[in-house]
Structures are given as structure tokens and as C-alpha cells.
Length: 141
Image 1: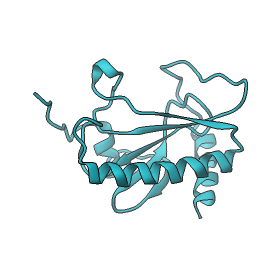
Image 2 (image 1 turned 90 degrees about the horizontal axis):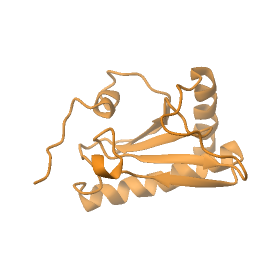
Image 3 (image 1 turned 45 degrees about the horizontal axis):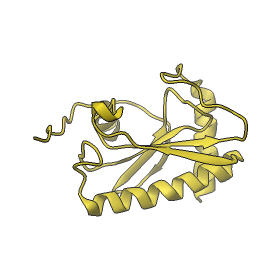
Image 4 (image 1 turned 30 degrees about the vertical axis):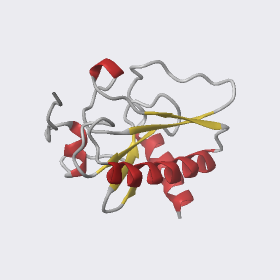
């Protein structure tokens, strides 16, 4: 049995504008914003605006839009921040490591010989995150 989507989750609140975020990208279908507990510089999250708990219940059409934008945003993050590579993460259900039950992709720019901060990472510097978001937005055009 699938657990129903809970529209009181933090990402649903961010989509509705009830909680602020450092937006990187937004259109009718997708929102991307900086992770408040970054595991690497430029760590951001890409989410659909439509309610979906995770990879196991998102409609294939929504997933296609989400992954296309995730790739576009990831390329911009790598370029804007001069990263050497990228880690992309998606967790589904608690057993799979999911903590916020609204599907999301973690986009983590990576540099050679630099390890990610262990989870849970400390809160990020809001000024630094705003600067990183601006650089990525500029790279998106």
C-alpha cells in the first residue's frame, strides 16, 4: 500500500511561499533552491511543483520534466561554480533514506579530492548560499 502525499511537508510549504528559500530556478512545473544544510558548496534541490511523494509514485510525464530540468540546472551549477563533477542523489521512502516526502533530487557539485560533508551537514551560511544561487541563475541565462 502506498502512503498518501502529505501537503504539510516542508517542500510543499516552500512551493506555496510559506517558507523562504534561495531560489535558483522556477517555472510552472519545477522549483530549484539551495539546500539549507549543504553537503558541498552549491548543494541544491530540484523538486516538482506537483505533489508526488517520491520516485515510486510520480507520474512518468512529471518525472520526465523534472529530470530534464535537473540536468539543465546541474550543468549550470557545475559551470557556475567551476566544479570538476557532480553527485546526483534521490532517495525514496524511509528505508531508502528519504527524509522529506516530496520527491527531490540533490544536485551536489563536486571537486577532485574534496569529500562531501557528512550527513547531517551543519546549516549553511545564508550569504554564501545567496551568492551561489545568483551564480547558478546567471549560468542558466
